[in-house]
Length: 140
Image 1 (cartoon, rainbow, N blue to C red):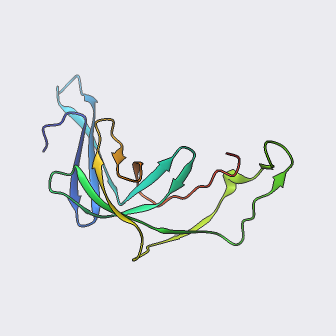
Image 2 (image 1 turned 90 degrees about the vertical axis):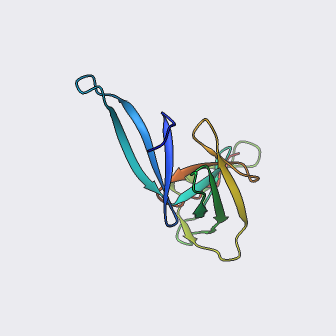
């Protein structure tokens, strides 16, 4: 168990296990806990999202080594533009599909857990996820 009351991280192989308190049961006066396992720390850069996979996590659970994954737009999805905005407006950007795979040559960096619950690396803010995600904002 850990001393932090709100969020704790443990590691099993390459996965982070998140344990967060969900409040105190008034009958038993014990804390209810929620546990989830996550393998990805997706980068959130304003409205764009880039996938990163967790390679390892420190014993304290506060530092992770992560690597950027390959994300290629699915060839079956094409953006549809109409005139408007600066150059055009993509009407179907919320239907994006991406082919995401591990990249042995991907950018590797260290991410640290912040008090707010997100992770921070030299790349920017990352959020835990159970699947890799990619998103490009065509309307920004």
